[in-house]
Image 1 (cartoon, rainbow, N blue to C red):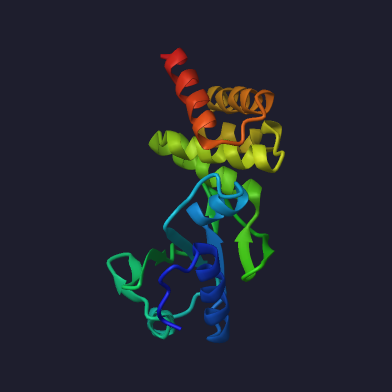
Image 2 (image 1 turned 180 degrees about the horizontal axis):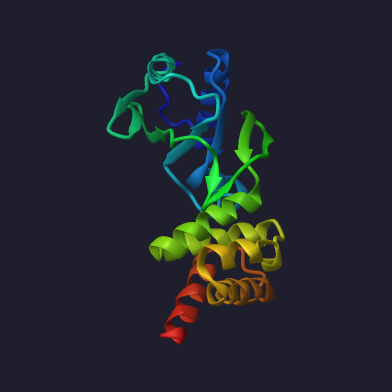
Length: 201
C-alpha cells in the first residue's frame, strides 16, 4: 500500500513497523508519537519518529520505505498522499545522557507497536525542556506523568543530574498541581506551566 490518505497516524506507524520488520529492520517509536499514544491523544502530532535499533544500512532502510511510497527529503521521509512524515533519529536509544536498555510493545488495534516506556518519554521531553527551554515539552512530560501516574520522585535523580535540584523542584511542584486538579487537558496543563514560570520571573 502506498496511498495513505485519511489513514490515522498510529495505524500508519503500525504498518511501517510491520513492513520494516519484514525487511529485517527493527524500530522503536519515540518522540511526539510516543507522547500522543501515552497521553491518550491529548497531544497530537504529524510526525512519526522511529529509532532503528537494528542499525540497518541507509540504503536498506530507504529501499524498504520506498516500497511504501515514502522517499527521503532532507531529514524526513515523505509520501505525497499524507501530511504525516517519518523520521529515523540516530541510534542508540537515549534520554539525556542515559542509555535506554528496555522498551515495550503496545498491542494496538492496528498492530503491535514497539515503543519506549512512558517514564523514558517523560525523561526525553524533560530533557528538551531543560536544555532548550522548550515549555511545550514540559507540558507533554506532565501530561504523560498524569496519564500514567508517574510521581516526580521516580525521575528525581534524572532531573537533578540533567538540570539541577531547582529544576526538579519545578517539575515536582507542577506535577503536584496537575494531579491536584486532575488535569488531563493539554490546555489546562499548559496554563499551569505558564503561570508557574511567570511567577518565578
